[in-house]
Length: 297
Image 1: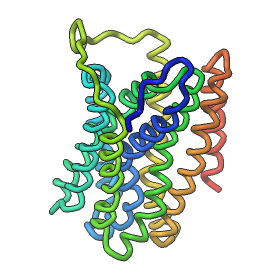
Image 2: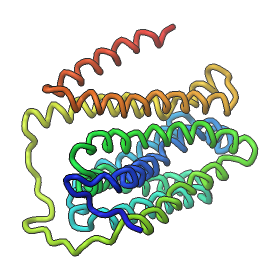
Image 3: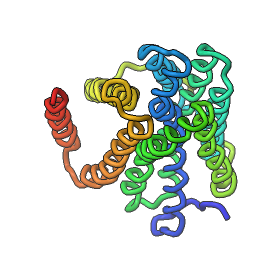
Image 4: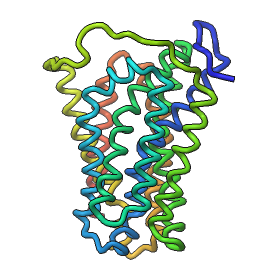
């Protein structure tokens, strides 16, 4: 039984669509949070420096950055089902390859593959919501599916460090691969095949962003940089500097995920009611700047 396209008054399938989109967002970011949660075990077992652990995340985001330039067009051509299948397959391949990687270089390449899935995540899930969720429910569906990112942080932080403590970081990576495997089944079963699509015009064309888009990109760059630093090094800092055991260090990441999960849904609903969205960005920036004052404490 597939998820039918949602008409103007249809509400029957939007929750299922949001569930698939949420799982896709969680799977797309799972490699990042697996590296973060398993960072203390990786650093100890492979004798990695902090910079080497950070380079694993840098490689993933670098691939995602380049692939994002064409990801939107790829999704337009392929459609939601094929795009989601590609996303799940890329994450599954990357995590399994990481689990069996014989050395650091192979591990770096394996995780970089998942950057392709990161690039696909927002375009394909946004298209899925736009075509299969009725208008009045779309803002809520977007907020729910975006919370999948924090759901991945919560799950990885809670489950992977204890597993790594018992069976090593490789088993943790292998366990993380379960989610994209489940996503493959969900998409194959629940999302109907896409009709053939034809996109006219050039596949990709460079265009200078407008001042408003350029400002939004700059804001996103600063926001993403701060988030990546926290996401990557939080458990490692808790382990190496605060002396917490791996499970406790991972729970710090899990708590970060819970806070983000609630905020994703709540802020989406607030922003949907705002006449000027930039006001919310200003509030968030001030809150983030205020929180940095707590770090020395």
